[in-house]
Length: 71
Image (cartoon, rainbow, N blue to C red; front, top):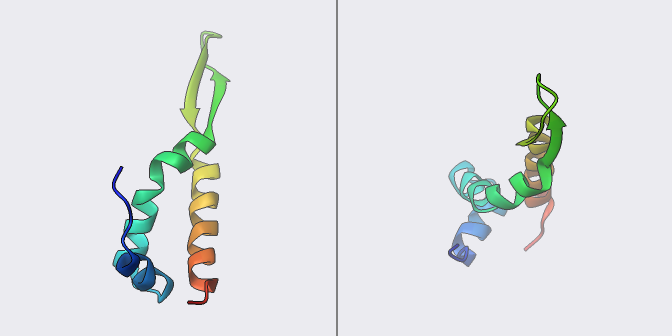
């Protein structure tokens, strides 16, 4: 994973939607890992998957935190 530049982060906290999407993309793998859990499929087997509701909530919290950040 490449590092995020200061310029991208500065634009994101200023509200630039393209930079905000870059930040979301940067943290996508980490958010997926946080939102992955075990569940039973139709046959009763344990499977793992990303809970999209949790993921959306975490992405929303990250966006709010970016907009509240003071540089």
